[in-house]
Image 1 (spheres, one colour):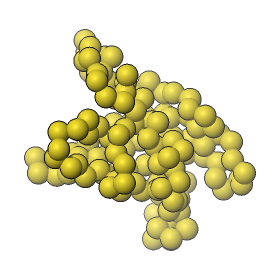
Image 2 (image 1 turned 90 degrees about the vertical axis):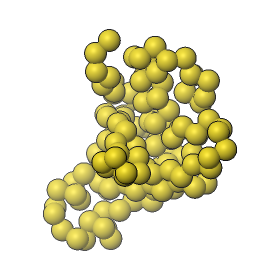
Image 3 (image 1 turned 120 degrees about the vertical axis):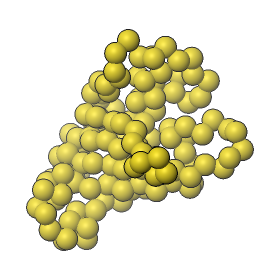
Image 4 (image 1 turned 30 degrees about the vertical axis):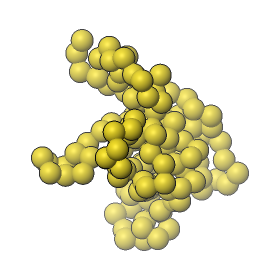
Length: 131
């Protein structure tokens, strides 16, 4: 079966290059992160590679609490790769992009695609949003 690796996927005006799940240590809160390219935009500065990081809080009610189903209580950060590479604190004021806008336009789809590909790779039957 081997190790799972995300296969790039075009979603609308975006190309999702990579998505993965991480957790910092044994007590860290898990998060999804990925890199996507905006291929078509109204303004030049909206084009290029971006990094997203998304944390989600769960209700504990036993619902289908996958990242692709997060709603309302999620935290999503979007940073442009070129701005990160400047190694300057200005990236947090000029280089931060609205997580809520990108969440609904690309991040949610990228995470669902990650879950779909992962489940297919590991032959997991999914009952959630990632069918």
